Length: 134
Image 1: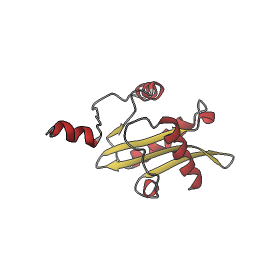
Image 2: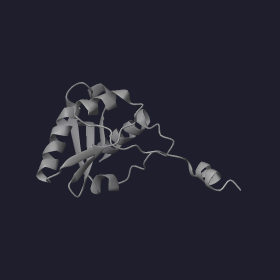
Image 3: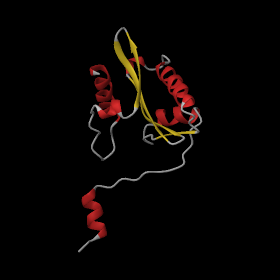
Image 4: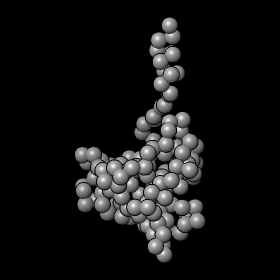
């Protein structure tokens, strides 16, 4: 668990840019979703977190430490994810990607993912002001 928590901290430090607060890394991350991880020499180098909803699979996170990238770690994690989804009879797989992370966007598109939805975000004070400007 400490190694997995460290990977999640690395992810937040490296990529978290949305205006929303980063997620709290809690035990629920590991118990409410399926977690796959890669390790080398006893050190966790990559993580994939997925979930199921009816016949759909959701990739919540795939993260590989910078020093372990371009070595097939993400592909190995995704092979396990695909096998898991296959056993669960998943029909479609969704994920979210920060559009400013062009490398990740290109990676997912090479794997066949296409945009089907956009999520927007606003802080509550701005929304309150614009809904009820007084």
